[in-house]
Length: 133
Length: 133
Length: 133
Length: 133
Image (cartoon, rainbow over all chains, first blue to last red; front, side, top):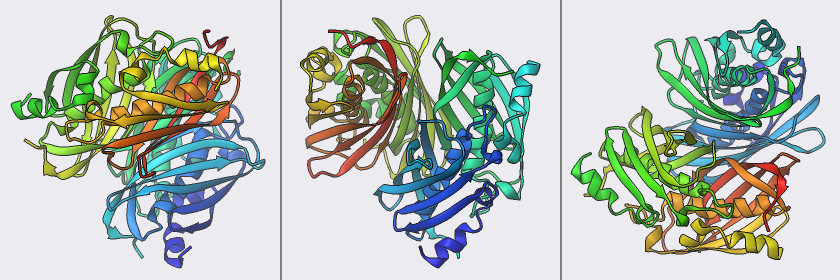
């Protein structure tokens, strides 16, 4: 991952507040993890859907900004596949399409056993400006 | 809002950790707010898409559990319409369909000026068990 | 509806092949109908989800091109709420957001009784070129 | 593909009316093709988004009914990645999750050059009844 990209995402305060750690990234992809703790649970004592979304959203943001052109989320669809409980959750984003204005990504979230717990797909609008230094 | 429903959602630790306050709810609907602070910002200094999602997700959860039958999220699609900055953000969920097994909701997120900043739609699976006391 | 917009959509051969009739449109909205016939049914003898989508998609296309600037679909999410059988189905698109590059719409599909059978939301990319004459 | 599954889907009149041919299927997956003709075009002379959706939807339906238990679509999200013109389009559905009540699939649509033109993800409700003979 380029130092500039890593530095930019150290400024993502919502991800930091929710304990998300960016692991690695490259052109069109990114990986992150979140160790499920009490702060991530919903009222039914499983990992909150919005916590899974937040983890998926970070890798979406990093992957879509990885080419150095500023990308803004347009939409995301997430499907919840399995309840997630304690342990380390990981997410990975992969680019499926990229042109000058739009790019689309899939995001997989897996639990400590490697089982898929959520699957998302999202699209960004690519601005004519670079990712801020 | 029924005292039982309110009590159940006081246990939503992810919503609490992110400063979301449930305002009111009734059969098939719910309202909540979140005062955008530094912890809600992304690397580009606007409110994080995942923070908007988290606010929308709470009203989705409350509205879909408001009939007393336990509801689990299956999928959510969110569209981001306008960048949100400082101030109070509010979300409202409305039921568009409900049968014995499935129910669907729309969630609107608005900024302090009343402008729509995100629009989501989501579906739940309704279990045969009541919302826990 | 402007004559130019109506003329442009008479060229929509997929909509015509599937019996969809554009009823009316204005800035940011459109209405259409489809009389459910044998050609619209799936293997289980109810109206095909893709037929409901096709009806919703036409009003999405007309509404998003109604300002005279060419619009291309980026993504659509559709939720199926109730099985639809024989009779006239109607769809309506409403604009929820529109800026120079992107615009978002909701599409409702109703059966002859007025019940909601499908709900969709979609976003377009607005090109810098006008709708062709 | 089991003869029963193939026979069931010969009754899909919307797919047949739109020239979609089921190629093959197995447990949790299916492939189909559609040769883009004039009837599949939109007003802008490219393959209609709803035609791409219809192709994706058939493989979604076949894959989700492939286990012999009747499956009904709950929701589908589709992203359009590239304009498709003349030639043979193919779609493939893959199961990403399946439990007793719900199952989720991804659907890829490719053009004659093998390029991805649309990507979808959808979820079904699995009824307690078998696929009709």
